[in-house]
Length: 355
Image (cartoon, rainbow, N blue to C red; front, side, top):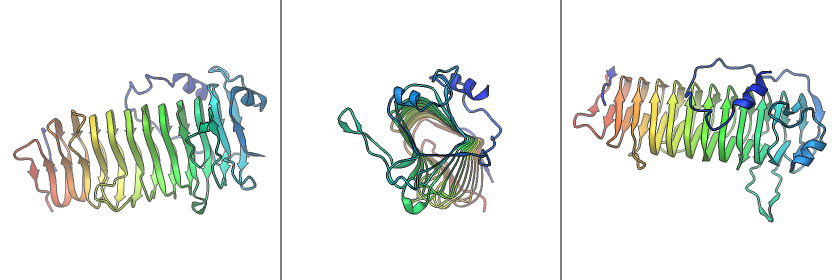
């Protein structure tokens, strides 16, 4: 063993979403219930391209923070609609809550133009484009792997959240690009090719989720700042064919925290950071990793970084930290086959683990 040293509730939540939503950092919370036993009314796919269309659909509410539109208790099955996702919300800033809905069986993405040019569209069951103030809660989003369709896609949007939702048998469970203030909390992702992918933006919170059996990435973050990834359970990750693929992958990102996650059964590594600045990796439990428990590449953006209070069990390397501005302290490393801790900023920073 090695110890290192040194080195109404939904509406209320809508009102709280904003630039300061990460200021409190990671907070421990109880997982919510998944609402997949609700009696739902069959409904055709829903397409919204502006505020007027949203109003004309006649759902309850006024589209305000105090009285959001409510799309609820629907079974949206797209199997009879060849190219339509189940739900598209685009070009709207109205407040919308989608709750207790089942959205399934889209076979392709719907292409549309944005000001005369093609939009950046992901083939998915739910697609949100240039919209804000959207919440999904207690929904079931599912596909078949052979359809090659993702679960939820979000592009160029802001102030969006997904809670208490099951996403299963999809290509990408969640794909988010160029989004400000996004929360993904208390969800279950299972039996998909890829888990959660975030590219570009500012303000990301991923907490209290379970991602089981991702074949690609489980949680991948690229070029997003102000990131909080806490209290997630990531299981049975097979990943790609590189030593540094991992259930949690962060690159070109600054100001983040990765806390209290449970990672078990990664074919490659547990947590990997590239070109990052100002990250705290604290209190995570990583077991049965094929290569690195925690791998920190030389931080091209600078630092500082803190790697503390983590437990790594059964890996080739426990913690590998490059760079001159990294503190590694109070970690527990056991059952390591090669090297327990490597610190490039320390003359005596290569420690062997106890067999």
